Image (tube, rainbow, N blue to C red; front, side):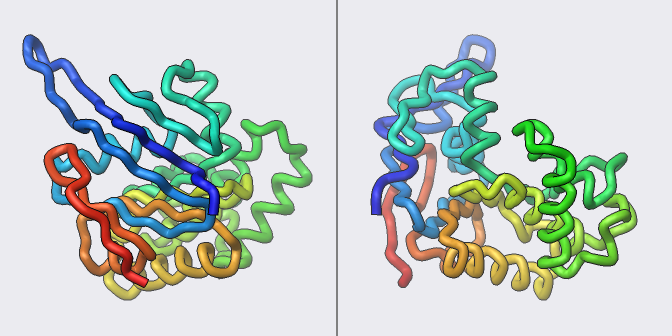
Length: 229
């Protein structure tokens, strides 16, 4: 397996008035193509900062970040946005669906930014929503859907551009335990049968142990890694 994502001696520092806060302190992390890895740590450990860097949402203060062999550490926001749009699908704890759009329109949205023709966008979105058991909910807006249904729409949206990487940030945090297990099974299915690279960011032991490898983060440093299967 080739390295798909690499963080090399990455620091992220924020200035709070006269104080510098080091959210990440020289972390090294490699995610190989086809891997299912969890980044686990308590609140304040630097998980969200690490997720932002892995997901091309931010650049490091020091160190280098590589995506598919390309150094993205010093790219502009517009260039990062282009890379995100092609390479990474996001699943968030709060779903981040647009309330004024239907489920179908939410799933079509990422494809709009990639210039995919409308007919193809609609066909692909309908297929994904049907695959996730939402064929009769396509015209419903997020407020008309349950939490589990909203998360399935979010997963469908993440898959709309067929990205090689799925980045899931506490994807079961707002769901009941039964629905949370279903979402985890979706992720395992994507990894096992659709050759997706999954990066799961979580504080939860149960979620983390569904991954193939866990990187433990504490106080901005990776303290250890563990192979789970």
